[in-house]
Amino acid sequence: MKRLKVWHRIAILFLVLLAVNIISLGIVSTDKNLAIKTVDKERDGIVYLEPLRQLRQLLPQYRRVAESNPKLLDPKANAPLVVNLDKSMTRLDDLDRKLEHELTTTEDFVGLKGDWKALQKAISSPEQLRKAYDKVNTRVRALVALAGDSSGLILDNVLESYYLINVVVVDLPNEDDLLNSLLDSGHQDASQLLIKTESLKRSLADSNSHLEVAMHADADLASLDTEKREHQMRLQALLAYLGGAGAKASPAEYASMVQAALDENFKLYDLVAPTLDTVLQKRGAALQADKNGTIELIFLLSLTGLALTIWIGWSIVGPIKHAIEMLESPGGEHVMMVSTNRDEVSQLIRAATMRKPSAAAAEAAESPNEALLRENQELKELIVELTLENRSLKKSKSVEA
Image 1 (cartoon, one colour):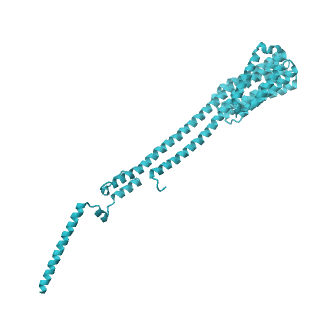
Image 2 (tube, helix red, strand yellow):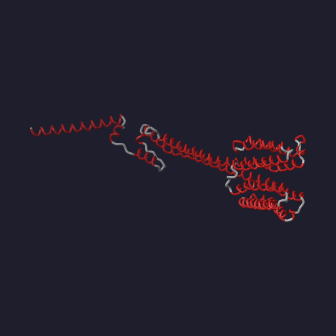
């Protein structure tokens, strides 16, 4: 360290500070990237839920058609219901291949494909059809829960998105399951009807309260209010119907009322799910902007540190180098440096250049001509002194004689 020059030491200090900035940048980037990846993963979960939403709507319809007229589901007939189901399964297959490492849903999806094939083969037997449908329905709902869990949707802790996620992953799927159960069982069993009606009331209350909290937390979600009210009115009308005229209504009228509520359920889902994705997209964009701003700030601080290092280094090394050059030049001992700076380096240089040389140094600094003239003068003074002494000696001898 003793052999290092001043600017070397300043450069080392700057490099240490730069290393600290780089490490800080790495830590900050890792932290920000983790939050951004979490949001992206949640959005992948919403995308994965979309074909599952189609299956939740289409599979009960498939079973009812299979029970009433299996010939309508003949693959050769190219029935729209079967085509739409195949499209949803294909879409889900593509998403599962793409997101298998993020969502870990592959095992359950493979099971769903097997159950779907078994359901298609069971359409000729009502008993086997019911069992196969129950397995498929259970598998779909398990996939909904798994996708919500593995994507991090259920773990989201931001107020507005948390309650929207509850509506998409929990409330509306449970509600459509209840409605399909009401549609399948009819209104023959009064006790079961009462139990399902009470469950439907709780589901409606949950979805309404969750949407209200989300809209209160984020004013941009006000667009959900209209559909929420229509959904609420439709469900309340159904509940009133089930508690009154529904017990004596014809099966067709009963099915029509339940189906209308079921359609409203999916309409609300189709509005809430994209809204949730928009909320997450905005959050991801805000996190990305925050990350970019932090990186720019650290980069700006590094550039500022570099500029300050150069300025401080030059303010120290520059005057010192100039003083050395002046003092080493011929006649440099008579040079006095004038500086307007008030720092310690300038004061030291001024003090060094203003110091008067000693007698020995002044004598050593004399030119050859000046030395010769001085010796001449001294010799003359010595001759005069000797002459005066000689005269004084002669005068004393004459007096004695």
